[in-house]
Length: 94
Image 1 (spheres, rainbow, N blue to C red):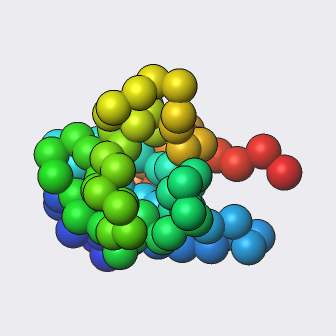
Image 2 (image 1 turned 180 degrees about the vertical axis):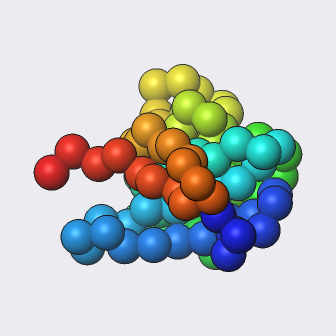
């Protein structure tokens, strides 16, 4: 967790899956690092409070739920997280 700044984002690729870690308000969130519209990497976007803004077309997604803020029908995948002894874990189904 120390390598991820408070109010920060960081991409990582477990087993080739593009995941975005978001640290916000002392909590850790994990979501797909690909916008469902054009596949743009959300890690190149901007974190604005509880939303991440896609760098390609300004769609915004709630990092807590993955939902597009303009419509709950569109969302990016989210993954459960936990922090133990200062280490962050993302729970992925393989």
